[in-house]
Length: 167
Length: 224
Image 1: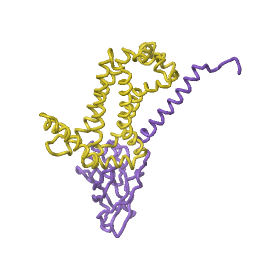
Image 2: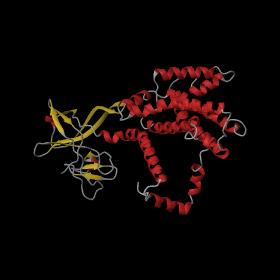
Image 3: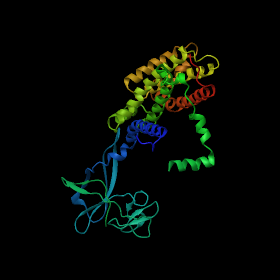
Image 4: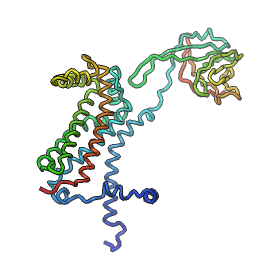
């Protein structure tokens, strides 16, 4: 044993007690913290397609409002929720289904609301979007309207979970 | 780094005497299990406090998921226990800790009783200790109802009937506890929740502060 003692007895006891105490405190707190942050770590459910009553053959180049309902599970609470899409066929014949949730602060937009020709209009702060969902510069929204993935089953439209629109 | 932060605060607020006064004092030889192993009986008060801290922490976390409502209470408990990560452990800590706190408190009481440590000048601290005992029983009684299962419901029915058998004020006491003359239901659950998470913990913290200030002031009782 060397004569030099880089760690004194007092320091050694301090370190070991802090270590053991910290280990015990962590063992106590770790389950509780993991319990609390669980919603963050659970991740988002994959977007299932939800059926609507809209016949695909009846879609035109004018956006129509499509309401659809499905059962939503919120932890221990299950309920029927209704969502809305504005759906039309673009000039290539593809179905475009836009979310009505304004990208400014989450109000609900409507097609040609408040007499804005060929635009989606949000009444909260006068936000405007083109028909393809692109936000009109100079109005509050900074991003285009989200777009629903679409599918067709038995001639009826099905809608998924809205995604960012890159028009 | 930590030392620097400490020094910075200490320079301005002079905190060293504060924590020294609370935490820095010698354990008398007759209380130290390193000298006499039998001195472990002095640990039960501290263990009661330790388990109480766990109860408060785990209870705080449980209320992130629990709802005190007759339609959702049981569902939310089922969800937090079975669907949330570590739910079974956090609920288990609160469930088993509730019993453990009673056990530790009882052992602490036995030690104080058989050592005669409650005698003059420490009678007031004994009284406060007994009040803490009643608050703990109240916490156990009100917490038992919260999962809103059959066991909880019937245990509470029995408890409230016992309260109703009090002479003269029995009926009023029953209505006060249950929130309704004949139903143990929605109002009982919200009442018990409020009592369990707000009123009794507040009383408990105040009483514990008194308990600790007195033991600090008077010191621990001498050797037998």
